[in-house]
Image (cartoon, rainbow, N blue to C red; front, side, top):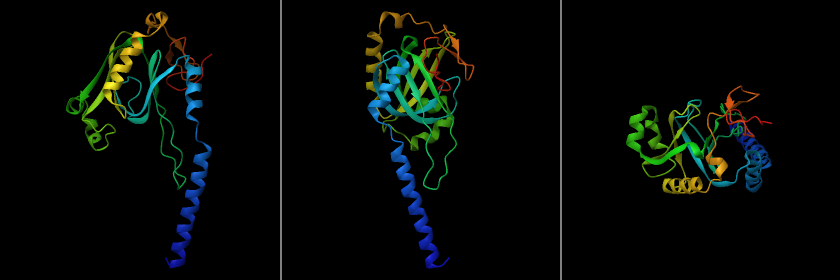
Length: 212
């Protein structure tokens, strides 16, 4: 390839980068509007949020993925978001992961040492090179599912784990009486994916479908 060919290639790449940047700016979401919409959908108030990496533990989601971990007034949520195409127009494969853990079902929130996490799941060994939180520990949330079975989910979060522990505990104490009586076994069915969901959900935690 001659010099003209290289210049032409660079020109195409620059043009692609400009177009991608313009499209990306056009899709930016106002943060205030985003949380206002979440509060309307879920009927809860936002308490704390953080960019986080879901590492596993949920019975319906095995994919390790980066997304948003957020605490609402009655529940803890994790949700990932589809990344747009890169400057070359290539979009990476995407699997939607979204789930809700009612605060009434959470029994423990702990900071688990890195060595213990790796002992539980060897597939996580590579994560020590991609850690979000620079401390050698991860967030463990223990809860009881709709069948009263004990479950554990793991996260790597940008927010200090002590902050998550303290804030979740305080939010649990301040929950309204009706939230404390919430029964995990009281379920309905999502009309889109057919999975069991709580009848008071306004959004399916598995496929994102709006529920009536």
